[in-house]
Amino acid sequence: MVQLNLGRKLEILSDAAKYDASCASSGGAKRTSLGGKGVGATGGMGVCHAYTPDGRCVSLLKILLTNFCVYDCAYCVNRVSSNTPRARFSVEEVVALTLDFYKRNYIEGLFLSSGVIQSADHTQGELNRVARTLREVHDYRGYIHLKLIAGCSPELAAEAGLYADRLSVNIELPRDDSLARLAPEKRPHEIKRAMGAVRLGVEAAGEPTLSRKRKAKAFAPAGQSTQMIVGADAASDADILVRAEGLYGAYGLRRVYYSAFSPIPDASANLPPARPPLMREHRLYQADWLMRFYGFSREEITAAHPGGMLDLELDPKLAWALANRDRFPVDVNRADRELLLRIPGLGAKTVGKILTVRGHHALSLADLARLAGSIRRSKAFVVTTDWRPSHLLDTADLSERLKAASKPADATQLSLF
Image 1: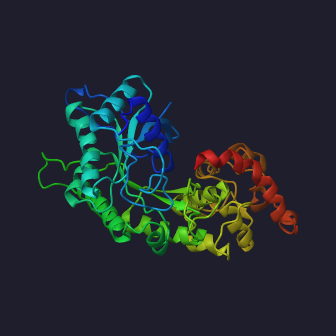
Image 2 (image 1 turned 90 degrees about the horizontal axis):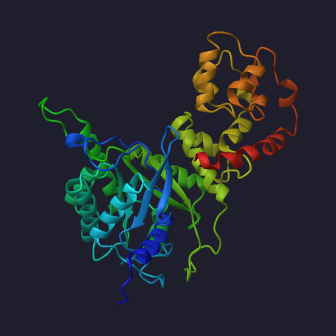
Image 3 (image 1 turned 60 degrees about the horizontal axis):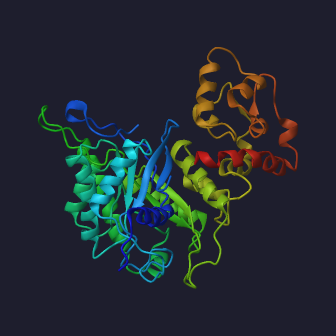
């Protein structure tokens, strides 16, 4: 076997990690240290950028422990039958890289995943050893996101949660039959069992203890996330949202990430020859946002798209509004928060501003424009003191006008999801 230097390993294993989208550090809590002298804080090559809920951009060292893998998942470039260059870090190398990158101010945390080597237990044990060494030997207090290997023992899963801020186990595909066909070694029930173990650990850590002096040990304080590959199978957007809704409800996930399938070398004939449009991935994130923060049900979103595929030209909120024209126009000076959130073009922050300002004076169209920044999509759906869009709503080409108006905005919004 050819011996690789550390730089070459980093090149291979950071590139191999780029396919995992579930690396945001949102929700991480600041870790305290005895004496306050710990290394790192939550707050180039192998470095990815993630965004926190307050809009901060943080940098993570995003690598695989190894891209050797005993599984032969058809959609994965690291599958056992792939001819990709292979590399493997030692535990000590990952620890040294993390500390060195942090001290040079390159990163604020670590995202560590791995191919499965020998067994799920062996792989998870190595991942845990990295986190344990950072925390206990080097008093590292920075953010750590660990991949949880489905099928590992409950003891190893519990240990991972004690050292990591966030855990993730990827569901991979939205339908179990697709997973059985494209990743025969993976078992849906093992993935779900691992997710359930994380949820139980998080809930147990939040329970009050009998003794005031003893606090429950923190367990994955930033929760768990997962990833679904979009476009590798025949699943529709409706299928994907059904699975996402179930995961949020059953396992208390912080985020479901959607990753457009990327064609890989020597791909199986069971895979599509081209990647899906990136806008499809974006529309799924928008629909996910509507379910989580805007009060939309999954059924409401998918009902506006009878074929099960989200419109690539209209965002899901606008598509819903056009399919429910009888609900509009909405008087922004009288409507409650839930209805305001359903107006196309108005985000949650803008709605908060509307509720605050209208307590002092009635809003005109110019006032709304100042609060929202742009009203080109919302103008057709609102009533203000000096505006009622009766003529515009009766126009037959409203949908086409709004499609044209939404294109530039969508281009700038890609980074928000």
